Length: 415
Image 1 (tube, rainbow, N blue to C red):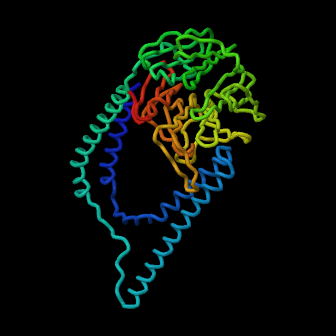
Image 2 (cartoon, rainbow, N blue to C red):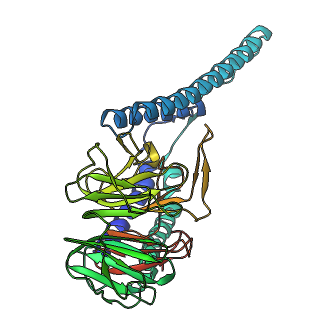
Image 3 (cartoon, helix red, strand yellow):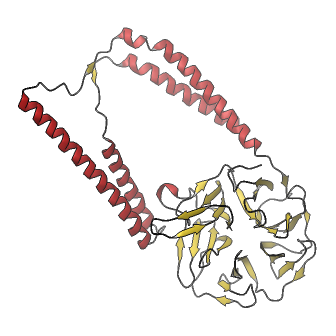
């Protein structure tokens, strides 16, 4: 597959270079130089496109009416500024033309005509062929380099199974990684290099960590471990849950029950409250953001990322326009509060930390409260993510094939 892609890219570069060379030879009549498009017109076109995209997001329910009003107001304000600048420019040009006309000066020609001859066109042939060869070489080198760079994202281990469903890391033992999958649970005690089955029976849906405790959700029970996953006990104070997460800064917990209901706890799972609002379908992961007032994020396999504020409805958290997620297939979502990322909106709202989501198109990061998402270098079908507050900028990711990756700089590079 890589060879085919490389061949296609090389052919495209060759065709583009050939077209660039042949085009001057085919010009038989002189063509007037086209006037450049003013920057203000370009900016206005961009604003119109942004409004079209924003309107489309509103119509498909990707953003709320309140978000639409805020963003569209900013776009209209920017467009008005460009219109004012264009009007001022035209007024200045009119003044200059009027002054020249009054003084009897002859206005210069607006556009020049450049004559093309066969000789002048053939003069492009030698440099053009050379440039085409150079471009082809560069494309091949960059493609090979990109392929090698992907291969250089060294796999530090492999869990030995496919389709992982969740990952957690013991806070007091950051080298202990726990991964759930559809037939059981795997444990690594050396930072993801080697793996062995954990002493938990049955398929596991998800896992989370709090202080020195690890939690695993299976078909019939919730299990807890206080020794980094070495031994396990059935938990008697947790309801049957499919997904669960616990806040880093608080005792706030959230989960999705077997009956597909959202339950919340403010006392680390001692008591639970069932929310009346029906959660989305196809949930694959759940995360709590407890900076300020805690709220819940879910990754879904058909709607991307959704957010839930207590007492309110679910809303899209896939980002806006150019910062939107490029896919709606999301498998895992985590909140990392101590990555040294901090964002303040124009209205003064703050967001501290970062949210990471694993998708079928790679890993993405948001530092502005899910208004936009940045693609990280780790591409491909990534199924689950893990993070420990003990190592604030260290992340682990596992692909659908079981490959384990690690980042020590909050996702900017992977090994």
